[in-house]
Length: 552
Image 1: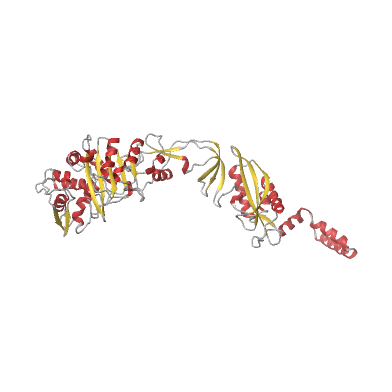
Image 2 (image 1 turned 90 degrees about the horizontal axis):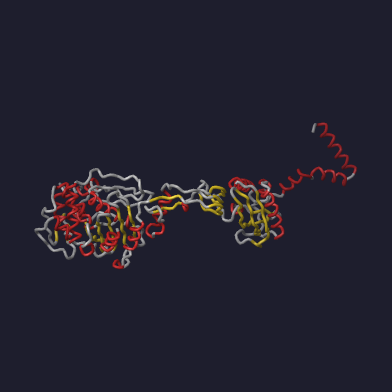
């Protein structure tokens, strides 16, 4: 309008006011009515979130407002629908996201009715309704509800949060339709047979969940439907499945049959409910075939870091052969007690003194004083007691292993700089020496295979190598001595009569109790077991290991 027009209109209005007040009102009312006037009126009636009434809207008010909100939403008039909420900007964006994420075609609502005062939103009236949404690949129906609030100046509004879109939907979540996103529950972690789900084994449930999250699955086809996704687009849960997909698979090295045996073994009645853990390996490849455990302190099979007792005499013997040039027939006097670095050491009950004992004989009866005497004499030079550490690292691959799939294991420890009495205690697996059944099973496997193969639970997982292979000479000596332990030594009560078995028992002191250990192998597997509170290796861990050797 030009300036002349504006002046003319002003003069006319002024004249009307002079002529008659009623005519002037009707004319001005006409100018402020219509679409523009309605918008102004609505703006003046915007809900004020800071002035919420404690009195809920009436059922009629709540249903009327909800119908208007749902009508605009169904027509995808997002701005208008959002204007009926107490957070218009947030609601508009979320409603658009709903339509885009679901590839929404049509949307309708039915059975819109009041459910009385809301039990979730104070001062609000709950209105329920049913939703029918035509989305990508299908039709989705679900019940929903909104809470309607009133301000102190009698403006009503839908209380906005993401649950308006779908009940329980979080603020950082959204909806998607069509190809269902992969989520951690749709991946199957299976045994080496490609079929058996590892989550069916009690000892492997945590390991299965970890592998499912971290390992890359193969195969599988996605289904279609409606799903909740998080802020990064990762699937949270499927709400509606239109067509089922096929789960992707992570294949492990676990032997399903041997795992079943291991689960039974750690609950053997002879253990009287004591915590137990065991690991079985394929000694040819390092593949982990079974992991089983009991107890409330986690997986002691791969994380139960304890002094391994006399099972460490396998490594001590290897060091004596490799670094001191001794043989199984070398002298190793077995005395009742021995003082080393001002610390007095004794043998386990039942070990008889034998001043003419050899290393092989001391190994068979597990004489502590023999290995402390020879170890301290031949392997500690000018206060340097790092020989056992070097043997464990260089020959038996001791280090920080990754078995695959993000599964955490606890590293063994044989410190290179031990001092005082620990310089002697290390040779019998005490002092600062710690290990897990996983590591001790690997020690037995290294002896049997005449070479270190780092344990893994995923085929194709990187395997660390040892700096040098165990010599054929040393491997042969150890195999002969471990065979003697199984046939006529400390392990004979449990393993005697089993074909091709080599073993080493261990009993380690811990506080006011002892722990029982046993490491062994046969022609198929290498295995180690730990029983916390076991009186001796043969009478606790021996039962566990026997199950696995027979079951393999």
